[in-house]
Length: 290
Image (cartoon, rainbow, N blue to C red; front, side, top):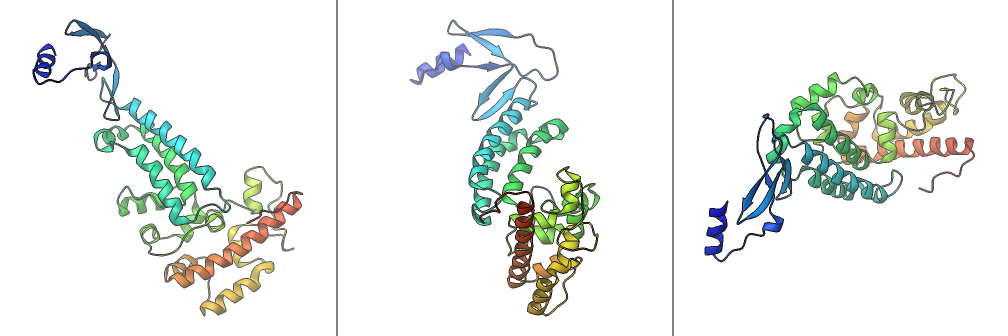
């Protein structure tokens, strides 16, 4: 290092010793710390140092970097959450841009540290943040192959209702039209103003639909395709599209064209908003403004 410092002086460059850090790359060997000197100035040899925005540690495991990247992205997501509330807020195209900003922060320098994601605990740190980003943006995750996504989708333990709707995840993710808003997302995931869901999360003791007297569990399928309170709206949609729409073809119909998507999305939006307002009324709260 003294030779390097001497060369720099000869090239009319100066090494800022007060800012100089050193890390011993030791692999799995034990290292108890130490010290080195440059031009007579002691430099502590630490376990980690930040270089060009990437935290490098002595084992090249990149745990520190992944943890810090997750924290920085988390701060961005928290800020974005205020701009992207579930009801109202930015439209899908703008949400994707904002979400991409958080993704970029998290994935900076990934070419260097991506092998570290083979460790499950490290990968989960980033997956947790990515999930929050996706929940705000309602965008697809496209960083692994379509075949792998499809296998993971089909073998997943949760989300059976959504998997029933979206049979071909690649076709869904690569569609050229259609935004998934808050209420469409609720219906497609089953997380919303449904009696069955409210009972599952402990918000209600009953799962029955309060829009009809059929003593039926209030599920997304019941709401759109069986509840008498909303059958008139479904009939209008089918007349408009000139075809029968049911739970096993609704997504395929939406993917056929932009108009189909718009008609069905508006149908779901109206039904879910009605259910939402009724839920709020029963709880004695004012309905959502949007």
